[in-house]
Figure 1 (cartoon, rainbow, N blue to C red):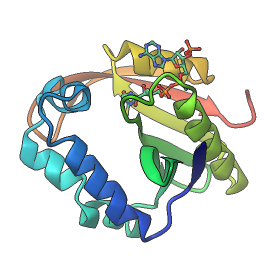
Figure 2: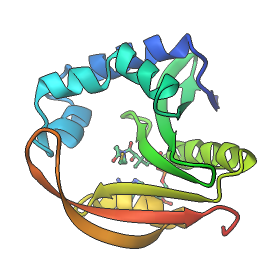
Figure 3: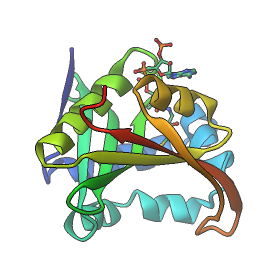
Length: 172
Ligand SMILES: CC(C)(COP(=O)(O)OP(=O)(O)OC[C@H]1O[C@@H](n2cnc3c(N)ncnc32)[C@H](O)[C@@H]1OP(=O)(O)O)[C@@H](O)C(=O)NCCC(=O)NCCS
């Protein structure tokens, strides 16, 4: 049975460990989809998912993590960053293989959006790669509307075409 809940402090260590382990396997789909495709250097990945970085995101960046579990094992997560009283950014949502396409991403997203709405957030936005058709379909299916396209300079020195989607809470 899949359980979805907000992360507790002690879950962050387990989440970091799981992410770093999954991303160490350079032949895995998750490594190819998230690291190779965007040309992200390994040092950047290790820093981005270190326990200290995730903890800092909570303490200093206004982040909330939501987790999906099966048999006490983390099988997916979502990270939402509060921008101000009414707006939040869905920073990441990932369902680990082989659990994709079973509705778990939708459950995680709906859980996180409901929690944000309870906290007074009215708008949630998300950035994704322009070519990320499966992620784009996922957001569109969940009611997000395309609001912007741009080319950005990534922290690892590459240019990336991104699209921004927005959802008005209470609108779906
Ligand atoms: C995007 C992601 C979180 C979706 O989670 P999920 O549990 O697989 O999604 P769901 O099963 O809830 O799918 C809901 C809808 O999203 C769309 N979708 C999800 N995965 C898709 C895929 N691989 N190809 C096409 N559409 C897809 C479909 O419309 C799907 O509805 P359907 O199955 O009825 O056709 C997951 O695929 C994932 O972790 N991908 C890798 C990381 C990523 O790209 N994250 C987003 C950017 S941070």
